[in-house]
Image (tube, rainbow over all chains, first blue to last red; front, side, top):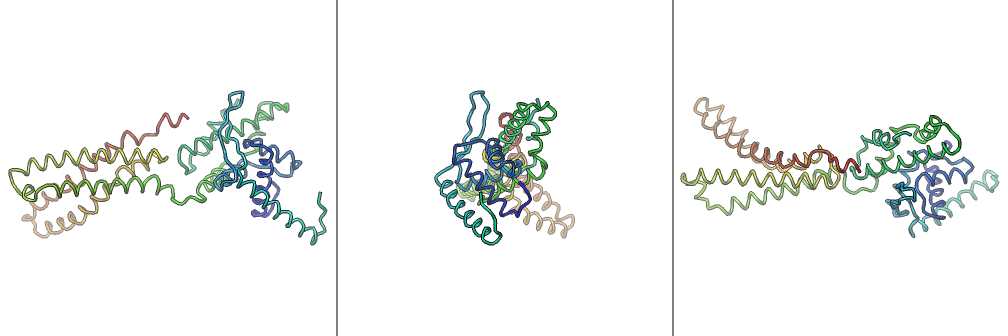
Length: 112
Length: 226
């Protein structure tokens, strides 16, 4: 991810992960790939930024992880959003929406 | 093809999380790197370039180890040592104290003083002490291993009841030694008594605890293979 204030970075990373998991349960690599793809490469995770975040979210009960075996016989740990995680996603979206509105007013930003 | 599991396992060997969790994390991160490597190969990269692309996901292994350890520590009420050493160790110490109290209270006081009984009492007492502490060492160490204790933590949990003996015998032996030294040659018998006490209070239970710990202190080949 680009250089950014750590708290903003963490908050944005949480939103990104929760948002891709809203669509379907995914394993770590696929979470990172989708975020990178859907952000046109603007958001890129290293293992050190992704997995501690996933473990924290799991501890907070926002996600539930289960080991699954693919048809090729490969084991992957898949993360799915819990009801608590879904609520958190809603709350995080509202916060970021308010944040961008404020920035737009001050900085004259254009929103996609 | 690179052995991603071995690579991750090597770099995360120092991370202070329980062994089961470490294996899970290592397997998960290795799978991530393998996926990145496979994706690079599918996109037309040669093996060396695919490996380099996968490793771009870990620019700093040290930072990864620290981040993983911190995320494991967050929100944990009990520290790792409390779970793997203090909890099993203190429980075994209480069991030791209870067992010894029962022996002392259930033996008539005159039996300890009766010369005819002393040899039998000592032999029976030492045998009981040895077997009891062998069991306590084994349980404490096995408990620590069960909750993910490292070999060092299993050893500490297993020999923890010795704290009780050091606390009791230490001051007495120290005072005895000072008194014996102050009496010169006349204090020789006190020195012999002190050696007996150290043998009974520290050496025998300590050896029993260590023997009990031994089968569980080794790193488990079965667990490591998972």
